[in-house]
Amino acid sequence: MSPSPRVVKQAIQWMLRLRENGTSPALHAQCEQWRAADQQHELAWQRLHTLQQELNLRAVPGAGVALHTLEASSQRLHRRQALKLLGGVALVSSAGWLAKDLQLLDSWTSDYATATGERRSIRLPDGSLLQLNTHSAADLAFDAKQRLVHLKHGELMLTCAADSQGRPLLIRTRDTLVEGFDGRFVVRQHDNCTQVSVSQGSVAIHTAPGVALRWLRAGEAVQIDQRGITPIAQPNMDAGAWAEGLIVTRNMRLADFLAEVGRYRHGYVSYAGDIADLRLSGVYRLEDTDKLLQLLPQTLPVRVSYRTRWWVRLERMS
Image (cartoon, rainbow, N blue to C red; front, side, top):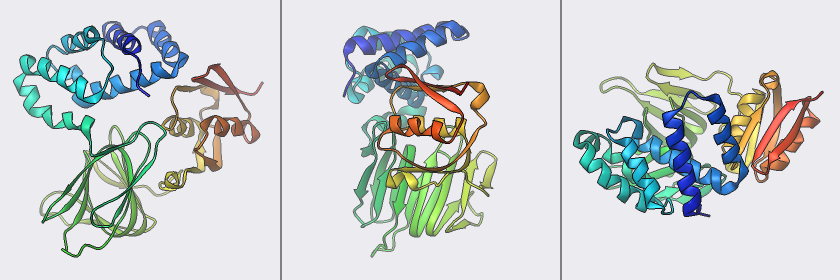
């Protein structure tokens, strides 16, 4: 489903208003209400937000011009259309920015991508199985020297296959380069780090040139960011359960759980501050997130209410 030109224009107007008056709590609340009022609103907002994030529009000289140009276009926010429009603005605004960030433009025309709530399995040319989680995108670069999967955003699971040509199997993210040798592992790219979790076999984390590889075995997980590689000793969630359509939690904060559920649904999930630290453990199916949320009052002192179809609110049971 694509949002209508009218809804896209409204989303752009909201983003422009927030850029001008971003410190206004009332304006943020009004925007959240607009997003939650209709699925098309949220879809248009997410697509525009992703475009802004991946092109780093805030750092572009004349970014306001780019957004105003988008608004004036009154077109559906399709990837190629938006890129063509923004490309012309970027060319005249900053050649330096264009040279730096042009590589990000192709994220809107990725080899493989999933929408919110969608999961997808792809058999790669070497026989490996690539699985993409919700709202993820990846490109392939298979040649005579390497098998490279570039995870642009989101999360993937890779089940490795042996290669008759002996080429390394690599996964590149913003933070690191992961090499798979056998088995199965998950790579998730967050806003500020990358997490790697191994369920079978082994992988190697490439660090700086000339520095020894960091090896991970089955059952191990790490977080990689600007500070380096940090082991994740006690994960609060099964990293690969999403491939089976599940969220499996272990003493997980309710706030973190709701953020995870929010990745798989359109709309807005909010909660009262006094329930954020409630803990839950269990197995939850992702096929219907509304049903999933309705299960929570069975184990936690919370109630679930709908402000609109797309705006869910959780509060402590009185």
